[in-house]
Image (cartoon, rainbow, N blue to C red; front, top):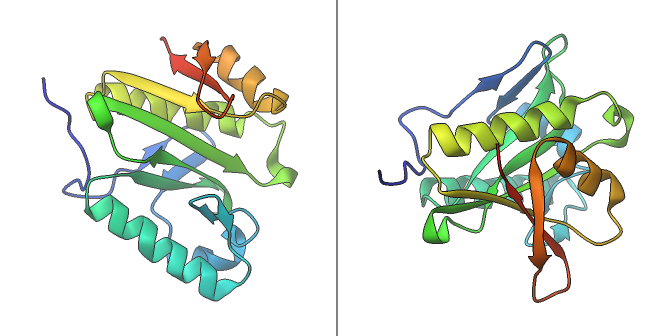
Length: 166
């Protein structure tokens, strides 16, 4: 089965009992300013946010990524972001994610990572789902291990690489 990569006929929306993973829109700019990065560079102002989201949207349209905003169902405010980045070489999706500090410790990211990984396997037909972090990002390492990501090795920058194994 071949990979079903973006862009999709409609942007995929993923839901749980308390979060919605959806496309980021202009009304989210203020919420994502503190947490948006592109190519490892953090946005400094709303113009940066707009430019980065335009680049993220173009990556999506080029079939190289899909990026969701994670919002709470009650107030529809963005708590974080998650997505597949850097293309889909050899049918592998690399997940990256960030959650605003005030929402950490509530299980939101655990749900979002699990939903994104399952979407990647079941809907996109990816062969592998990986996540890369730093050796000292213990919260992310713990989260990945709790939801069946297994540490494989270190990458060229000595960062641990984890693979999802449902």
